[in-house]
Image (cartoon, rainbow, N blue to C red):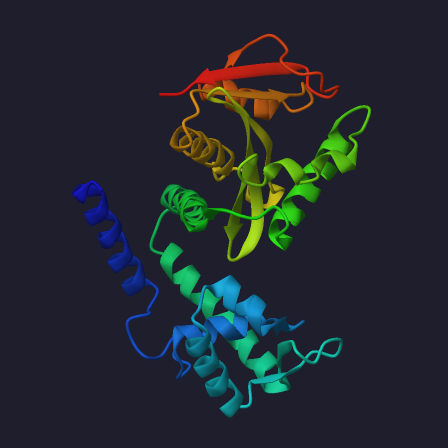
Length: 291
């Protein structure tokens, strides 16, 4: 990794942590750490499952348990069994916790305003726009892509969402049973699943056709993370995986109702070719030489 880039990231981290006041043991002058404050905010008025909170914040189980114990001792949260499933633990705010969360919101607004106040209007717009871009890029860096068994719950979620989106966008609909994972198990194929905060947000598959040929299938990205470049990342990871399996020619097909997919394939170097299957849904066919 480029040392200059790494150095700039570290300088940015130092500046941000100092400016938002997380270098001390107390955050927003409330006598507790940023971690405890963040847990209070994430629990929210509706409460949340412990496992969901752990995944959302990417926290170690032991560390989250210590944060929750401290908040319970203060009388701000209660951790109890879920009404529908006693095996699931839920966190909810006590009345004191609701009051404290409101105070944290007020002080967080004041902190944000103190960052913006010294700047003129143009500088404020630049800073907020830059923050939005940084947030998008940081989220993109937090997405994990791994090979996943197509029978896994996350894989099934993605394949179902993929089929449902095609069904809603194709003029004649889409046969939802065609997204079954039978051909996505090695050695016939494989499935990559993208996750953000442990939640499935995208997928892409390879189907091996023999003679150093494979096809890309079921490339899908959740609307919640579009704009992060995840579609291109999945496509690149599929290409790398195909190369590792000795594939020299990648093929794929798409429908004109998915113009963003067509634009992605063309920009990634795929060339339009003649039809190579009898699938009734695709209208455009592409191929790319690897290696």
